[in-house]
Image 1 (tube, rainbow, N blue to C red):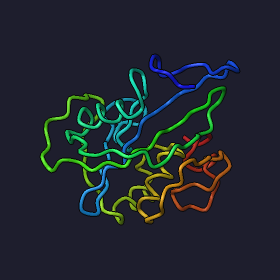
Image 2: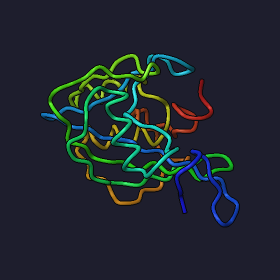
Image 3: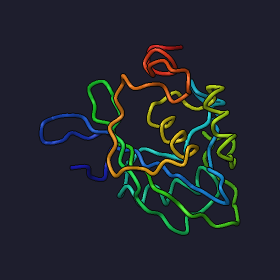
Image 4: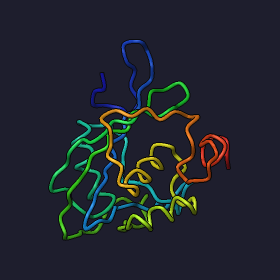
Length: 180
């Protein structure tokens, strides 16, 4: 069971669990993405997301969205829970679909350079250019949105899956863990 507290927890079997809340915010056929300002992936784009450290997944998504993007959610609905392969940890990404207020405030998260709306075509171009954070869960979600694919309630992302960048290679050796 995942409870509020640290973003890493242990289940009854002693397995480490990491929970992340991610938001698919859509407006007029466009998807809201954030560009990282710092760290190893500075300049890369990703869905607005945050580790669940305090409160529920829904509370984390609701709080994180305006901090990272400046847009407040007017409605949030859980559309998918994605299990991502991790070494020695169970990593779950709780994906919420959001309707957002048209009015934007100034985001307060200094880890984010900017938030911008992308059309389906522009999202596919980001993936092709490998400008999306090289995480199978993030890339698969952006690709599924760009292709208009409905999300299943629980998805398992296998580390041997094909890379969502469209190269035809496996994720692990293309945009994933073994590539730099």
